[in-house]
Length: 234
Length: 239
Image (tube, each protein chain N blue to C red):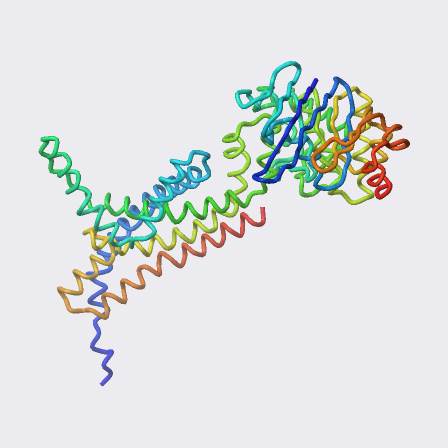
């Protein structure tokens, strides 16, 4: 008898797939807002690290070391559980009794945004630095200021190499939303875990989970390749 | 226009300019010649504060140039043309020329474009207004760069080896444009290896070596009766 015939993919699909479809919307929210935050933060850190002011550069350097030296999962748990507790503790020192909590999806978005922002800042910084110095000088000698030259002339040229590599981070972030299961965001992994532990349809459930990620990430990475191709052939 | 006293520039321990004193008068064409590494380009870049001098004094029309000065204002009056053109690759030729007048001088778009077309005609490239710089030859790009600098209506132009990155057959067109500018009375400081241009166009030739001004004078004097031994040796090698 074929052992695989015992698997109940149809039964798993009936209950799990609708749940996963709901989970998609959570994944998409977390990715869109997380990536938006990461892009803004990455840009700000990159520009800050090119600043002349030593304190800013030093502060950002330490911040980057802290974030890149700890796992994303630990950061998520820290933001979700520790940050509210710390806040309440500090407030109590001033005699204020607070009971701040952070919504799990919000914590997830901040975790993803901060972590990815730090990695993306390095890509953005390298792209800005790779633009010929002559471009800045040409803008300066026409009477533009340093930051005008950066924003009007240099960054638009840097975007050409920034966009494709940020696309890769976008695909990575979609997959890393699975870590949000550990801060109680009901995304795909958490939904699947719950379903599998109730029904013992372990093989079926996690196979569907893997397929669900492929359904997002494969079209997305092809879309990014297409955008990259368009940018290079403009 | 410019009065420069005992200008010095160091990069770390490297002393690139050692006590340069010089003046530049209105309408004058000054050519700076000298071997590589003599500090010619650094000196030129000090004039519009792309490099900040380590010590010494510079006056521009009586105003002292120092850290407090708004270098943006100075640069609107003292334009610059680079060896490697440095046109903006994402803009058309026309936008390269109108970008600064529109954004810095707040010139109206139509006026800026009219001015740009006049300048393009002057440098012989009116038909290239709507193409991107990457489609142009080096000589054409450099002429666009000159038009771009002129669009700010500067009182003076600095040229940093404007023909050194060009194929030999393209040099002539650029020099022709520069000759025309000189004839129109533009104040120009030109760092160049084109001795023919220096001889024909310059009012004054300055020979620099190892961070010093070694000798200066009319082209006739420098090219025909150089006094300093180093000038003689340099000219013997390049002429």
